[in-house]
Amino acid sequence: MHQMTLAEIARGLADKKFSSEELTKVLLARITQLDPQLNSFISLTEDLAIEQAKAADARRANGESGALLGAPIAHKDLFCTQGIRTSCGSKMLDNFKAPYDATVVAKLAAAGAVTLGKTNMDEFAMGSANESSWYGAVKNPWNLEHVPGGSSGGSAAAVAARLLPAATATDTGGSIRQPAAFTNLTGLKPTYGRVSRWGMIAYASSLDQGGPLARTAEDCAILLQGMAGFDPNDSTSIDKPVPDYSASLGESLQGLRIGVPKEYFSAGLDPRIAELIQNSIQQLQKLGAVIKEISLPNMQHAIPAYYVIAPAEASSNLSRFDGVRFGHRCENPENLIDLYKRSRGEGFGAEVQRRIMVGAYALSAGYYDAYYLKAQKIRRLVKNDFMAAFNEVDIILGPTTPNPAWKLGAKNSDPVAAYLEDVYTITANLAGLPGLSMPAGFVDGLPVGVQLLAPYFQEGRLLNVAHQYQLNTDWHTRTPTGF
Image 1 (cartoon, rainbow, N blue to C red):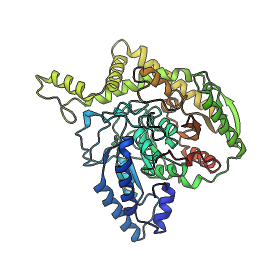
Image 2: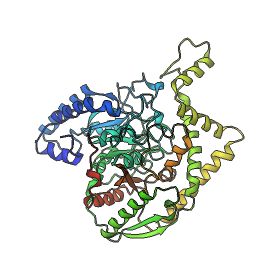
Image 3: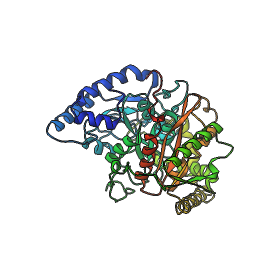
Image 4: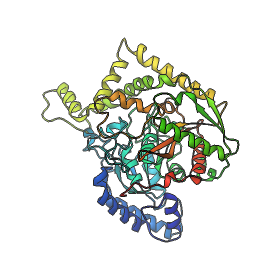
């Protein structure tokens, strides 16, 4: 049962081959048995899961149907879940139980999804390796000595190891797409504003976006359908109808114009990954796509711009964690200043402290214009590059990451080296565009992803291209040894 995709689970439940309660118990047992190797979960919610599974079975018995009704999933541990620990992978929130459900959690629960637990993540979503979590690093099921990517590494490792069919995740600079590439999954970052951020604990508010992680594009379409939609509680939510993503999966790729930026194939790209990307291009050409070389000239400025904007917003967002109202509080503070200093110093890890300091500096008097304002101007140039490119092509294709997953601890002493791994993903966040990573092969036994980018609100186009590709390749069906 653990090998089934979301789509297969939906068909099996509809045909009464098994119940949601039976499937949920199988997966909970599997998590208990195998997750100690991976550390992909922070919290398991067995009682809630069984309760939700029984309710889903009752709804089906009463004639209800739906692709998510009775389907087991997990939530990245920055989506608030009422009465359940929502830690953000941080000591700061280890004792925090949210008093409400995030919109994404509430929407999926209403659709009948069963919550198995909360997945591990880089602390406050800051990282590319899932090594900054206060609960310890997550291991990549393809090789337990390597990272699964971050910050949604717990969700990615759990789905890749067949502990569950799909999970929610978030993407601020590639944190859905990069773990998807590192663990042989399909991961989608929707257009900014397509999925509500209400109840999603913020890292960088103008960049964060929730999305699905699953094994196939078809499953991502199912999960996104349940997550997307306008939310009046979120001022950045877009009031735009949500299309039927599954209905568009059968469209032909004949004549589809695919742009390949020449800047993607620089000296920083592992040549073995470059070869796999070219193989993917050839496969899409066989399906009728037309390939065109394009240019994104401001891509080289994206990383420095991102690593000014994101920390600046993080320093503002994380100022609320001060030991006064909720979260970690130091013992026996001498005065208010001591309370602030020690609570934050004890509650935040090294990477979070580093980014808060960078962000506070960038926003300080005398440096705002030199750094933050200039970074926002570069952001606009990056967006303009994409708008010009999409006048010529329908989607943009390239590598998701410049290298396969690295060994645990390999980049801990050099944070900038880890930041450079985001070179292909952060531009979509700066511009607010939808992006998808899909499996494209292996290098030294480690998965590699190919990234697709599309114009605003064209998630259906990305999902269809990935689905057609997956109908004609089998990379996404490969399972890590031992799982």
